[in-house]
Amino acid sequence: MPVYKYNALNTKGKEQKGIINADSDKHALDKLRQQSLYPRHLQLIGTQPLERNLKQYLSGYFQRVSQSELVLTIRQISTLLSAGMPLTTCLDSILQQIKRGSLQQIMAQIRERIHEGQSFAESMEEHPHIFPATFTAMIRAGENSGTLEIIMERLAEFGEQQENLKRKLQSSLAYPILILLVSLGVIFFLMSYVVPKVTQIFLDFDQVLPLPTIILIKLSNIIQNYWWAFPVLFLIILIFLKKWTDTYKGKKILHQQLLHLPLVGTILHNIIISRFSYTLGTLLQNDVSLIQSLSIVRNVVSNTQLQEAVNHIINEIREGNDLAKALQDHKIFPATMIQMVSAGEQSGTLETMFLKVAQTSQDYVTNKLTMLTSLLEPIMILILGGVVGFIVLAVLLPIFDMSHLIQ
Image 1 (tube, rainbow, N blue to C red):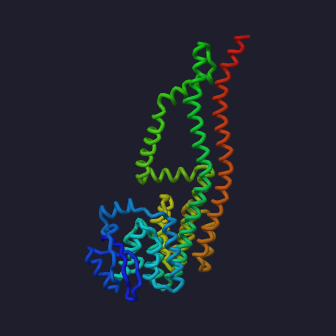
Image 2 (image 1 turned 90 degrees about the vertical axis):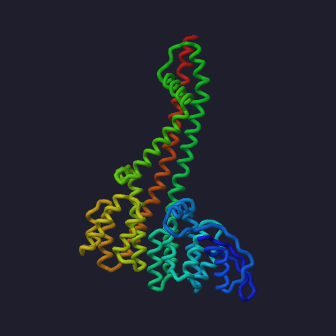
Image 3 (image 1 turned 135 degrees about the vertical axis):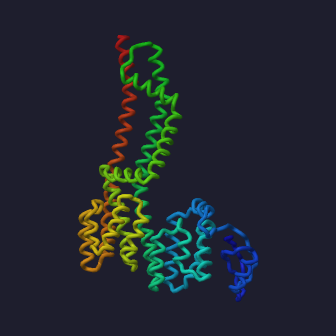
């Protein structure tokens, strides 16, 4: 459906700007007049399809919305709802603040659908590439219970929690990646420019060269003549891995191997447990049933081992078994988590226990990332020093031999 940007006057003569969805210019003008608005300017700014067809798929691919932008919008809606403003008024206010782009058009579409009688959750479900199942399930629970402002606040907290974890991961890996790129640049410069000029002198003397020098010359020739093969090979490996991991078997093997990596595997495991526990705890806290919450979590998590475990757990609960007992059948869930879940079932505080497990796992990830970063930096510097040391040694050895011959 086309999206129009309008500038109109209300019944009090005040200027009002916004966005509206309509089939045509005439339809847009009629809809504005029905809202007691008198258009001064109307401009077509884009199209937002409704049917789930190829056009919607392409729009979902190209109309990306950053997680931070989405979380900020949710937080703003939560604040306005807490102040007692109706949902449609909140969306009108948000639309005036959002910069022109995909999110603005999507929020305009949602507002129009609410005007047409749809619920907030139903309107968001038309944009699955923007709003995950967790969001729509919690908002539906909030609308049904009349606590939408509380749900929106928890959704904002949930999104901010995920964003904080993402930022910690990025900040922890930024410096080591920078060191790696600089190291590769220095080594490439030495091997492609400096080493050939120096080693050519030794070749002109036609003397027997030490093994390190021969290895260095061969490596330098490979880099000089076939440097283009390295990015091509890297790209081929990436494409192969992408195709392989697109299959369920390949993805399952990759996830299993990643979790068995020393130190890194433990961090990834705790990230998975943290996201699983936080999502499940948040859904349960907002009156979503346990089986429905597990079904949503199963679709949200990306780890195949956890997805299989959740499928088994859902079946166990449907048969009348306890959640803690169902968790015990899967090694991916740590023993402390199972004990806390068991205590939560007995005391009726299951959602609180899941949130505590999520916080504990996130604290573990933060501490281990700090330690891993502090270890990576000296290790990478040592590796760079070793490579440069080998180059220097390979260059100096023939010089020492030449000096002995001169004496």
